[in-house]
Length: 211
Picture (cartoon, one colour):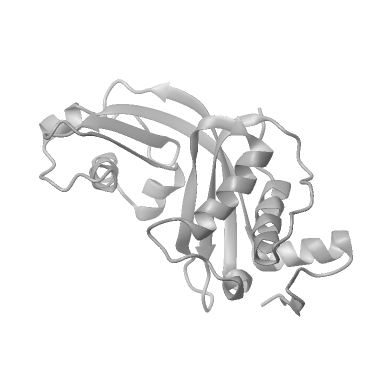
């Protein structure tokens, strides 16, 4: 099994910086494989709690190198919940890569563990619209939710704005999964680049320090 690792996060930062410089990122230092994956960007301001800036991925297996390259940019620039990340935000960014594993079809909407499982819900709403959404394993635990609270939040994330009833919850098809993840702050990335490549990352000639 492929585990999320530092080189995958380095490649996501490399990809984003290459985008700002209108260049191609250097080839990554991890092996190719096929897995579902997500890239999450958070912003840390004044030592506070990291705040989400973008999170997009795929629940289908994809080539890791293409996948991380594509989703590093999509999550940074095209998550519709947030404005695109700007180059000046880089020193405050933290990146997490997730590789999803161990998909299981649950028996019902409560058949999963907070903190262990990510969840995918699929349901048909009262207007016969198909809806689906997912939370990565760390989200319900970080929010301090019960299983029911996580499910109800996910129903809303799927775009359903009507009353949430027990009969609606019971119509849900739930798939749970697990993940490995690796998180790195920009300052650690910059130190890694300086140590391994001999120079700190730059954008269009302007050095980005370890803020």
